[in-house]
Amino acid sequence: MKKFLDISRLIKTFPTPKGPLTVVRDFDLGVKKGEFITLIGHSGCGKSTVLSMVAGLTELTEGVIILAGKEVTEAGPDRGVVFQAPCLLPWYTAFENVMLGVDQVYYTATPLERSQIAEYYLTIVGLGDSMHKRPAELSQGMRQRCGIARAFALSPKMLLLDEPFGMLDSLTKYELQDVLLDLWQRDQKTALMVTHDVDEALYLSDRVVMMTDGPEATVGDILEVNFPRPRTRKQLMEDPEYYRLREHLIGFLEERSHLRPGKPSTAAVAH
Image (cartoon, rainbow, N blue to C red; front, side, top):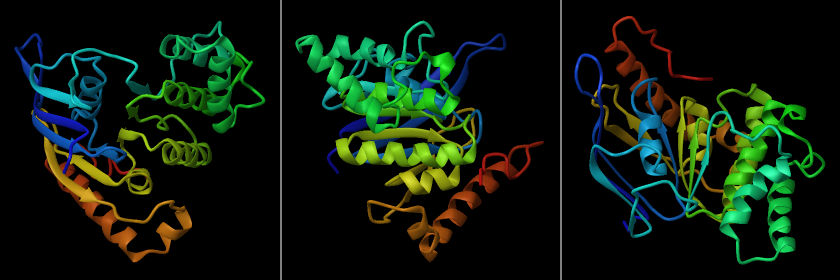
């Protein structure tokens, strides 16, 4: 497999009052160009730490991350990051928030061309009529649509998503999953996403990477998700293979949960 993203022997250790704590140890993952990968596991297993290291926001203790043939050593516009809360500047409109990144990345383009890029992505995510509103005037879901538009508008090599729909109600979450898939299929971005939600992982992914519990978390299993694209929820729900894969994921999480004293067995399984 030709690796577009190559994560090798990744280790992350944090200092604590009781001494060094190794959160992630010997994490290895290769991702093909255009692939959609999700990381799943219990809270505290290091999923977001891995994503943050790929984003260049958290320093590696050991190991190496290579993206498109170049070692990742710091944050950069070649990675579009979408967090659970979209971190919009409150005094700027949705359009102006997206333009902040567009102006930096497309500095050789004309002002009109840059405006068109921002308008294009804001319209695709469903904010065509609301792009000149400030974050306080937008719902949580609309703010997250703006965050997704901002990430894609940078034309990054890779999209990194840290539980982007974790704070949304079910209906808004389903709508935004479809918005994300539509954009991803148009742009064929390589994507790495952290989620707690088994159904979300199966709906979006080409492969689901299951992480063992921390400390010293690593890759426990990798599940191939071979449903044809474009996908619909209806197709998946009617496919017996969907339920087999779902049981496999839940089984992994339940087994891990039983190894964790005092933790309920359904802790990381969202329905």
